[in-house]
Structure formats: structure tokens, C-alpha cells
Length: 136
Image 1: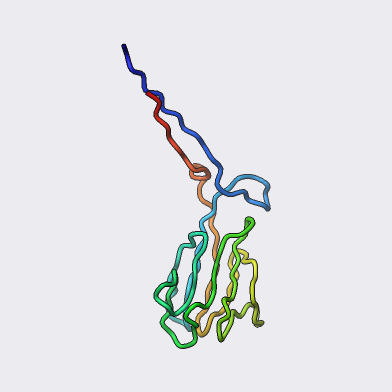
Image 2 (image 1 turned 60 degrees about the vertical axis):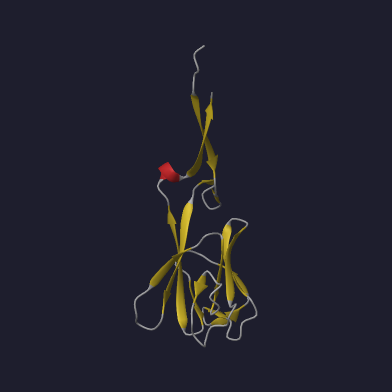
């Protein structure tokens, strides 16, 4: 008896791009800077926290940042940032905010730090999640 291996490639879309109505996967990053110093980039993973406590995804050991300052998350097809009851809040376009939806290249302040949100399209070849199944 001959065994035949069949490899199936199943393409599963991951994220729907609401503006264009098609399927597109995007990478999202926060770039952190203070003053005129260099920026540090952090890839966003779906739900990330910012604060001075080492348990945060983005830890900023600075007195102007609360231990559990803010949460960045992907909700209903959009990236949002939400204040977690911090002392100094989140400043967006000169106003303190509790929660906002982020758009590409938006900037906001947490303590004495500036964050820039950036989304980048992944090439079409990576727009889908690949799952393989082997049937014997």
C-alpha cells in the first residue's frame, strides 16, 4: 500500500482594512522620543501597556510616567490608546484625553515623552496567515 501525503495550504485573512474594504495586514509601531534625542521603535502586538513598572510592554523608568500609565490595543479594526488613571495623563493635540483612536503618524505625549504611531502595509504576499495541514 502506497502512502500519499497531501499538503493543503489554507489562507486565512487576518485583518480587514476598513478604509479600502479589502483585506490587508498592517504592522503597527510606536516610536518613543524625548526632546531631540533619537527615537526607539516598539512593534505593537495587539494589547500593549506603557508605564514605569517593569511589567509593562513599554517600560519607561521616569518620574513623569505612572507605573501603569496607558494601554494601546487593537479594537474593532482600529488602534486605540487609553489612560489607565495616570497622574499626568495622555496629551493629544494639546489636550488631555482618556481614550482616542490612533491614525497613522499621530503623536501624543506621556509625561515628558513623545510617541508617534505608525502603521505600515505588509506586502501582499504576507496579507494572509498561512496554515498547513498534512494528510497521510
